[in-house]
Image (cartoon, rainbow over all chains, first blue to last red; front, top):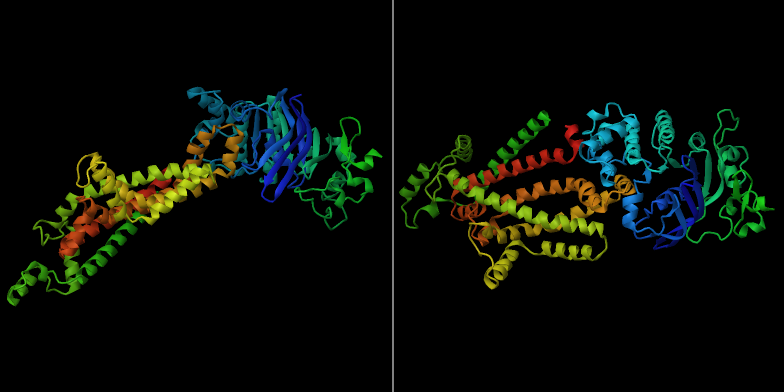
Length: 320
Length: 306
């Protein structure tokens, strides 16, 4: 297994209290597999992604327990210096949400794309230059050898996301964490970036964790998805199984909320209520307050029920 | 780019003409130079005669036109007091003033940038607190007082550095510190807040996520972004140092334009005052122009926007 995350808990120690942003997460990604991490804003998807790299909010973020193993190597106990040198950008890379702000405005793209290659001692001098040109070609930047001295503002949004992708894949990482890579882009450009991620995966056999709130994007790229709610994973399984027979009430509500082109309904479906505060959250099921199928049992933490074929969900209704 | 340059040069010329009018009028308000030039018991006839010889009997606007015409030809008149061309006098003193202002600026940047950067990186830590106290002290201490203190400690008690005059490197250290002391506070603050902004930006987060060593993130990728607001400020301070160095120049007996102009004001030596202040304003305009041009070097977006 490429990545195995067990019972990961990452809490933010704020002045207002302890925010249980990531609370007992189990994930695994096989080599060359794409896992979709789906959920609404504030569900802890991005913080889960950052926790894998141990890039926690300075001062407040702390990994409380659990383990993250990459190719069997434990990352939670690895010293910071080794993490920066051997893991970040080398074996796990990350693409951020907004391509317009993800590139440094005052450095040329040649410098920025070359940065990870330089820092991880993969190439230097003329070899570095040709490596940068090569990786920019792979993300389909036209005539990259002429554009190494250009700056981010001279590229379009879609091209910038390609450049960010080039920075991420330059060192041929084993795992790519893509945090909403298409959210800030036009729909037509989104399709191109999805195609690019597919191609990267095909060429390099890299494992991808795709963080998104867009169920459509997740379905088009992923074989398996994990649905996150309030810092926990409520349902995980193959894309088909989850879309055909969503088992957790939250997943069901989420899928019902997708607007359909041929529906006669004129109002958008919404899930009533709001996610609970993660400072002092309910001790039982975190979705209970909004759940149409709530029972007395829901006051206790729900068991994770295996539904077969790698499909599982955490809900009392399924346990009975 | 060239359009931008021409526009900025034209603005500079207008500023200098405006400055020359203001200088000309203000210096006329400071009193009658004849009374200082001639002995107290000079006869009215001699006073009239001298007035006519120096052209001081003409209406003000004529005096200004004569002044402007001659100034364009490089003739600012002769110093009433030193009996030499005013321009020569100023040009002789100019290098010393520029030297002092540059050293003061370098001193302030050398102190402000590291403190500002480290304060931002270790926000709320001891260096941040010490930096804030340091900055407060800097703004609370006027240049003349810092100058006297420096002379007292380093020249008189420790006897490490000369207390006054112009010469080798050792002579410029104390006046440069006295001149650069005050701007340190403002520069530290601007570097700190700019660094805090940049360190919180997406591209720095991406650099971290891709394993960029922390020293490169801070001193390379973040600092160049933070340099843009600092640069604006440096332009203003450098110009202020060129024009405002007279206090420090006087304390350290530094043979610069500022001290010469102050002496000329006291002796109502109009040509020297006019030449000195006009030259300072030209330097002011040039230094602002250089700063504007240097944005393009630091920030490629500005380079292309022109």
